[in-house]
Length: 209
Image 1: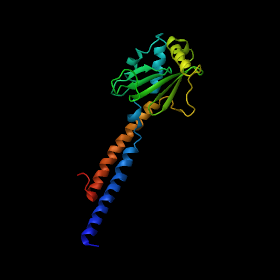
Image 2: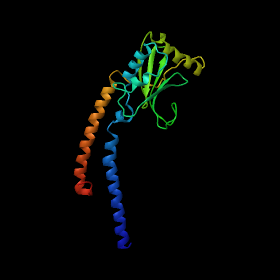
Image 3: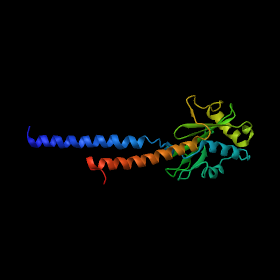
Image 4: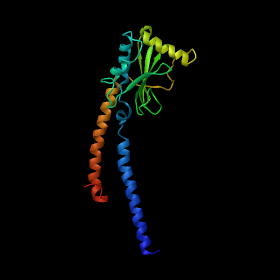
């Protein structure tokens, strides 16, 4: 083997080693932060269902005004405005309008869905990370808006009512503040760990200053 070929092989091998070390050092740190709050928990399902119960009990039979309730804390803490519509299944869908078309489209970003569980007299909400939260409210289904939801359900499901999937992952009261706190701690730890890693790696592989 020529010396030039040998040195080329060593050079390529060194680059590959650096790439592997960099991936092992930085990528796990970034994905291990449990930063699911930023990814999909812009809406507090507990506050959302409480707000919807309050709105339904006003006697209103449409959800036009509920959109304003959704787009402020403590229900929603995201940056982009959430539009709210009721679909053919009687579900109330909150979404970010990503394409400018009227109504919820498959290409839009779904933020939450609220369903009416008539059999158990409760509201069932989920976010885009498939976290579920149930809010029981006896007597709620006597109000007009709930009757409208149930009517759409019966038509959509062929005379049946909505039932949450058996595999639903239900979160408990107070989950949202705990999730935010956990995410905040993880983010601070990641920033601290990343800067420390860069400083330690600087001498060996020339990352950072």
